[in-house]
Length: 229
Image (cartoon, rainbow, N blue to C red):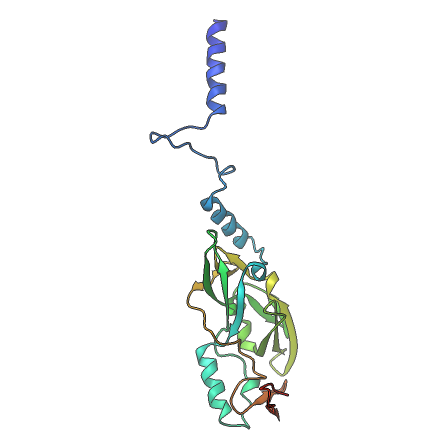
């Protein structure tokens, strides 16, 4: 009887020590020990769902910011009218962040993320909020520090006043397997435009920059070396 019990105990311990093997001879791995691509994707999904972000600027390059097509058309129309206060109007659609990011295999791809889904305007300040649609009450945004910081003019209260607000995009946007991502909002893999980031202070052939209140300011003078002052 004792011999039978020891045999059963030995068999049970052996089953626990060795992973089960399917018919094709491939060992099964528990989720806790599989460090392959599939588990990495799952971990990234959990990271996104938990609301923890950051670090896209540490792995992505060629980071740029563009207005939507509808907003670009509005600026082009406004440029023909120097007295236009187009810069004071909130955006019609979400601006986008564009970057080249490496995926889990080390290949670089271009990703385009609508950042209107990543933040909200709370009394004139940009805050990290899922699908906050901040762009409906903000304008005159521009990059700072090579794309890590994003500065805008946002309305306070009932849209009576504009104030400057700055948010650290590197604390908000993540590189998800080569795609820009905030919360569950994932960028789409598209081509990367070659043009520089949109900058309202330099946009347009007329050389007008806009004051914080959206009215044309002084005319920029191009020097012989091609720079503006």
